[in-house]
Length: 599
Ligand SMILES: Nc1ncnc2c1ncn2[C@@H]1O[C@H](COP(=O)(O)OP(=O)(O)OP(=O)(O)O)[C@@H](O)[C@H]1O
Image (tube, rainbow, N blue to C red; front, side, top):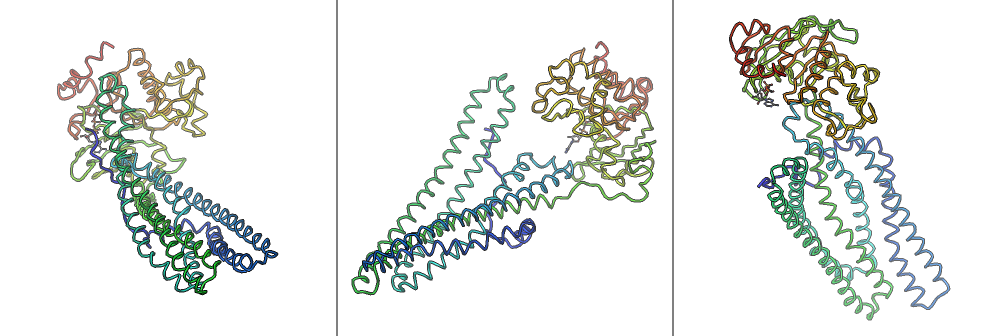
């Protein structure tokens, strides 16, 4: 069994939270005139709806019953005009509200995306991608729903209901009181059922989330499923989740249908009461026939908004929960970069001098709490030098490179460029100087050319030159569309070696002075291996490079090798020195690199 049914995202809370709404109003303010226009239209549409039964009463009492047919066409025309006016006003109202909603949602999505882009890498370590996507899509969408059906139209509904009550009381007090007898039951039914439905609906969302996660995982890992003949097992698991989803939907359907049926019944009961009581009133002459018809029509108009009010209450609850989650995300601290201090001027700015020395001083680092992965690392790289990091897996090599590019900041100690702490440099400036080649190259959907330049203008001018330098041009030019060939999702239509070469070309195109490289551990065939080695050499030439090395050629070519063992620098020296010393490196060499000598 893969899934227990846990889904963290749904919070049931208040339908109105002043603190959240106050903050949210800021997003509506730029479009306040649209909101004001929509608000102004609400009483108009309410009045148009209210006037229709009244006109009906007039038509019956003053014309039909009285036998005065000459004025009737005019009343009928008035009735038609009212219906048209109501339709037109509602149309404009809906358009305005939806327009407002779309504008606000666009702004919120932009702000969220901009914010997410600047969150520190550690945030993405602990946050599942799926939940972030949800924030930017469905949570924002729920707010849109609030505009379409929620907050502003509630004002209209309340106005309308108050209007109906007023008119009914005015027509006939006693008859109104008889009608309102069903009101408490109606309100109780509507809200109780909504709460039940919301609980049931929450279960549906949880089951759907499980189904989606399972599907995403299984489809993503279909090759493994097929290779290990896991189809039957996966089918059974899917059947279990699918049944869970179906069964969770049943209560929602039942509650919804019951609510509808009950409201209809209550409204019929109210009509029945009126016919029974109103009939007597007509006979006694206290009520006209037209007033009775108008009453029945008002009752019908009365029940629909009350039923909808409970639905809007649910929408508002959902919107408050979404706002809470969106604002929580916006309140996450952005990247770790402080503004540069004056002392950083030497290496800062577009025209800054090249860095002469990169030095790690007693660097300690823990991903969480006091669990140190790096313990007192000292390391110096001089301009143009290639330093290789080697060591057993999990020792902390990649972490050293992450600290240099400031994916994370050191917990203790410092990393300096010519004596200036890198935390004092503006982050974009630091990242411009450093080119990072990750172990798993990440390719985007787009052309090969775009994947090399990533849309940067300067880099775009160097696409071909960069590809040529690292030896990627041969395979790219052999493709039917060359540099315009589309890369499919994460580069599935390219081989591992080709993806590597593209990532080298990307680094060269950006022409960084410092290179941080995490060599891929995946083995490729010997021809690709040769190409990659050549590419690597070209990439590192003339650049200060810090490389997590898994290839013999890289370690041999390095000016110095640092052996990272359980978070500490155990040894440092050239390949020859370290071999001669017969320590950790010598052992590692025997185990790890020796076999590569044949290739
Ligand atoms: N994002 C992270 N959050 C928490 N712990 C992490 C994270 N990344 C790595 N670690 C832990 O830090 C330690 C060092 O990891 P690191 O990736 O630096 O090792 P490495 O020497 O590069 O290993 P390899 O050669 O297998 O790539 C490991 O114990 C790992 O579990």
